[in-house]
Amino acid sequence: MKLPGLSPRIHSLPKAELHLHLEGSIQPTTARALMARHGVKASEQEVLERYGFHDFPGFLEAFKWVTSFLREPQDYALVATDLAERLLEQNVVYAEATLSVGVMLLRKQKAEANFEALLRSTEPFERRGLRFRWVFDAVRQFGAESAMEVLEAAKTCKSKRIIAFGIGGDELQVPTAAFRPVYERAAELGLHRLIHAGEVGGPEKIREAIELLEVERIGHGIAAIKDPVLMDLLAERKFPLEICPQSNLRTGALAHLLAREDVRIEDHPLPGLLRHGIPVVLSTDDPALFHTTLPAEYDAAKKMGLQESELEQICEMGFQYAFDPASKHQTT
Ligand SMILES: [Zn+2]
Image (cartoon, rainbow, N blue to C red; front, side):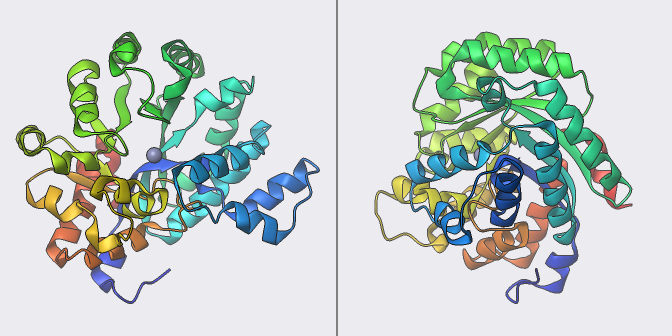
């Protein structure tokens, strides 16, 4: 897990993961275990090929494929346990993990049973120093009505560990305003509000999400770099962006942003956003699908030219912008 480019100090700092999809954390070996449970045969090679996509449609296809093996509550328990072990190895002490409840409901699964299995499997990790909070996530292209059902599932599950509601998926579909009643309802239920925006969409998607939905953090938001006025606004309001560099590289979002194909991680806008005074939290998004870890993301940030003190600052912001105010006290 140790990366030679990172200092022992950065390695040893306790960290928070705030943009992490449970389904995207399923490693190929765990995917094979799930397939075996459900009598689906595939060679190791075939599974690895599924994880070898090169663009956004390929990523969505891989995500869909791997989640198709999450069929019963114990499947969720297995992947959460596997994720928790990996987070501990990376010095992560607090995680706000996103759960694709929209996909669960589409597959006619009972969110309550799945969530209960998740809680049972992750609670023992609190004694080992890792605390989970959960984000119930809807799929944008399924529309506002489905998103509302995700909120109702959150209400039914009735757990203080469900800390936020979010929307992911294809940000170019369904106008942002259509989700306004959904976010109002989320606020009524006492949930924090998130959305993926400005990943492949333009800066206007970020602005709309802040103004129309009153979200509290933006997933990705890299398109902000194209809009100096929006950058000033984010800096003034101390509005955090959840930055996932390897994800942006592997889905092609970075190439899209820079309008050229030959992009490298060093071209990521993270330093520009951070040095403009915009709060940034660093995350892995879908670590298994993007072949990354949180230390690898810090290493990537270093390759972009960030100084040791800036990496430390990012580490601290992971706790500062966490939704559970107690996240900071994890390390004591
Ligand atoms: Zn994401």
